[in-house]
Length: 200
Image (cartoon, rainbow, N blue to C red; front, top):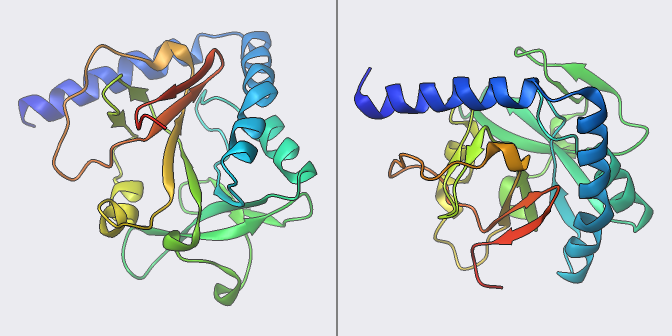
């Protein structure tokens, strides 16, 4: 393990413990605060197809925000693990009536036929889960690299989804070790408000 890997693992351990130590009431309040502004922010950007995620391991709960997006006829999509190409994501429609099944990591995903899924490039916006972020647009994930591999071909494309992280304020750090393959974020949505890195 090199110094960068060791540093990332230390940050992951610290931040995951920090967010797990928050009470259930705090998590509910933070999710409500997010839902009070994030859907409106997305609506103002004229975004229609949004990649979302289901909270795991103390992540900020997006469900109240997702339900507000549904009320405004926005389309949400959950990541689905696909065997080919390896360790990349496709996105399946997610609604209140979706049938969800656990994948190999025991994370729920829509049980749909492949022809109902869309490619990452067809999304207007992707809400990224993360372990930690900094104010330079750096994002530290769980270490699997699924999102980085999935969106690598789009990072410099003229037409691509906007990449927004979703995180608790407790997940902010001063600076993150960044690798060449890491996907930079355009902004981060926290319970206290949106942090815009793209100057939009």
